[in-house]
Length: 69
Image (cartoon, rainbow, N blue to C red; front, side):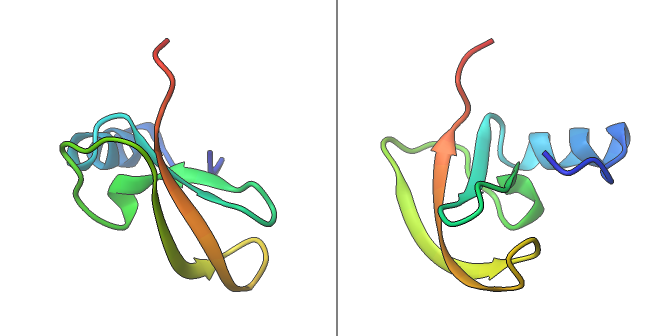
């Protein structure tokens, strides 16, 4: 996950989309999906195009449910 996120901001994102992460398929950057939207339910994977802050380009991203701890 992004190291620049403080705990309070990370908790806010987790409340908006509990357990969901968005991952760039090119560089592997993983961030909480709550940073970009709200997702409360769903099954499987959702694919989307979006800007990757690490690649600095439009890339294909996958939205996954984070593995149980």
